[in-house]
Image 1 (cartoon, rainbow, N blue to C red):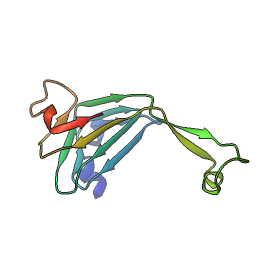
Image 2: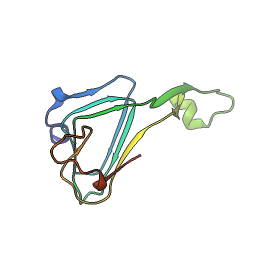
Image 3: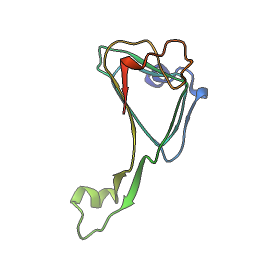
Image 4: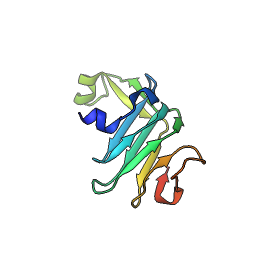
Length: 116
């Protein structure tokens, strides 16, 4: 049920196999997204954000083999570490209806979100 609330139109969401998507906050909705890389959406629980018609392409995060001799125990168990090459971060500043990637999206107001 939680996935249906976060992704009401899953047929409009494309996430490549090498992508990382992190949603922080209870009221994040992804209506349509084309992700090839890393996207972090961070919203306080009392606010809402909807992602619509957003395309994100960056180098993302990569799994890198570790040198067993130098690695911490937790990394040895996992077998890799994450190399954070690049990412797109959307942080909610104040209440807004829709955050979208297209300039012509109906309710887009860039002043309401910070895209890093």
